[in-house]
Image (cartoon, rainbow, N blue to C red):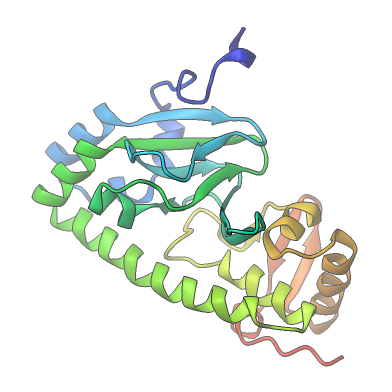
Length: 237
């Protein structure tokens, strides 16, 4: 029966372990934290489920507790442009939530994921009352701007190896995605979806990066060994 319910209908209160995976809760004062925890909900998204859709009104500020999401939009020709992936610890859409405007992008689960949502009214209450929350949101906005500028640069790159390297580096952002750490749980197919290349081409790029000592391919994920080199990667052909 639960398979027939929408993600919104499958929402539930978070567990204690899930609350531990929400980075900004620790920045709140006790009364602020109590209010936020009482309002937070989580949903267990299946692969392909939409968390946000273009044109829909914003009702929650969302974050990833576990799993992997994709942020994208479709152009006038029907082509899909992927902006970024959202791994564990990542919260997104604060600009949309601030302005209470309809979404201008889609957020879709690439695999089974646990997504947390803070109601929009509670989001604005925290902005009005919490210095710690304001600092977190401002840091998010600043990092996000840099991320999207980098994403535009990646789109213009002709070297597939460098595209994979820079795209991978963006997922190891400790400010936007504190839940990732040194190991990103991602398959080569999921990375291919995010980068916009074939799985075979992504595999070749990962092999080149591993030979350089920048990353190590592990079972079920990738370990970053040299993040600075990954961010400035220039792979010889």
